[in-house]
Amino acid sequence: MRLSIPQPQLLKTLQVVERAVNDRSTLPILTNVLLETTERELTLTATDLDVGIQCRFPLIPPVEQGAVALPARKLTTIVRELPAEQITLEAKKNHTAALSCGTSYFRIPGLPAEDFPTLPPTESPEQTLVSQGALKTLITMTAHAMSMEETRFILNGALLTTQKDTLVMVATDGRRLATAQTPATAQGKSPPNVIIPSKTIRELGRLLDGSSEDEVTIAPLKDNQLTFRFGQVTIITRLVEGQFPQYEKVIPSAAKQRLVCARQPLIDAIRRASLMTTAASQAVLFEVGSIQLVVSKESAEVGSAREELPVSYSGEPVTVAFNPEFWLDALKVLPQDEVHIELTGPDRPAVIRLPEFTYLVLPMKVA
Image (cartoon, rainbow, N blue to C red; front, side, top):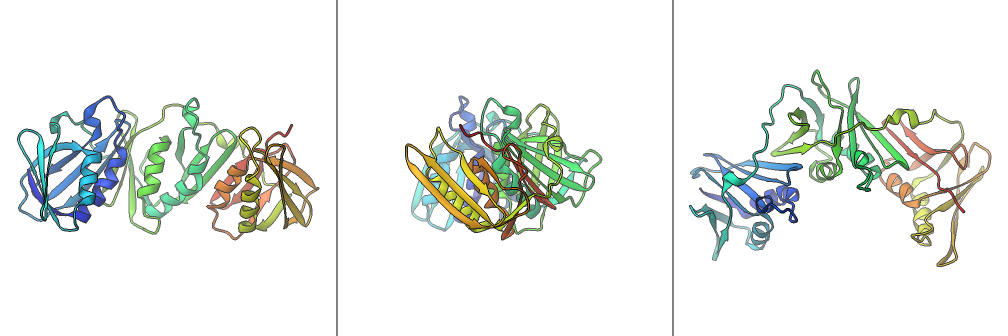
């Protein structure tokens, strides 16, 4: 195997696939990236057996075909330090690779390519198509609500499902819930209804181009796996097994009692009040009146904070406590400058309801 490739192109591709590498794996081969060449193409693959990322790009002939598995982090570090010139990479018969660029030369020991896990074929007749920008928006609007608690494995990801011609993503940690939807450009006979692991969701959010109308192909694979193909990138992921909560049942009907205020001043007030929270006392108080919202936090350990905001509220005055991070996560991704929050009582969930986004957050109890 021998090829020549520009340093910026190789570095960019390595940085895409190495995110699937698990440095703590007990299997040495999983700390490697697989490089394979055909007559006109180089394919880089990395996997931790749960998520696999593959990236292809064309090469200028002549190219000697072959394959080698090389340490992913070390290879990326070396390529990053090389000048932005043409790199020549040659795999030897003893599973080592010679890397040269300008006056620099490296010899990197690797592992046999045949030891690398084989990713499943990604072709499937059942395909759902959606633009990169639309899928990234779904992730941006919902990923913050995924659970980080390992004991709640069914919530350590996001539900991807369909409603007629609409693709829907839902995430919840049991204390808040976010759901977003977008039209699908095409659907197979069996559209997805799956739970995608949080790691895959984060990688998709990182790799997708939010301004691109190019399509992402979503297709089910055997053994409870799903693939996403876009541009030169393919992501193959195992799915979370189990039944996602029936989220529709916990979203209340639209309420007439609505708090209306400017989004950025609300973010600022909540962030400042959160400076006075502690691990044992996280709740921030919202005191809502017809024309004023008071955001406050008082702690015997660190002191107190209080801020008043002009608002419009159509219900009875109410005082309710929330985790400030839950609000900051949602408010910062909203596109509107004005936010409408349904508030019906101190022990009832608050809801932001938009045509393509719904966010629900439960209040906290204050001793």
